[in-house]
Image (cartoon, rainbow, N blue to C red; front, side, top):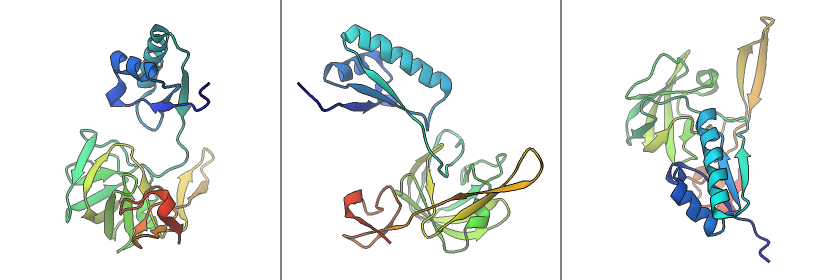
Length: 211
């Protein structure tokens, strides 16, 4: 009897009943939905398709909803994805009305007050590295040091920033503050600074050490 359970994450490549049927037939026991991306309607359609496909395959398959915890994230990017080039000047903005070729929206209004010139910002699980040039009331101007493709709602990491504070208005008009911690790591193998999820040099978590 097989005791190990296989969890398969549903993504764009599996939004097809035939492909999903193949996953279940070869042994997928649990189908994971990543609630960090997509709409409620998208997830509802996937659940309906998963249940129908599992019934057709003659197997009972669990459905796992992965709910994201607190995380600094990008907002909605025009066209959903953007390719960043090395040396490109890129502006991160907390002003929702600004969006364009060299601008990325950020959902957290406290970002410009949390960083300063020469700080590093990582995007897309550490694969993209930005260097802060200037920060104003609602914008952070950066230079892309390591380019790549970034998508809407992907995470952002601020290594070296021990605690960043965001002020928000409550219903009573008073100001409340919340704290988000950002962890900095350094790879044991190459010494490269990395985010808490992935080394920028490509090494897995086993090769990291907390700074």
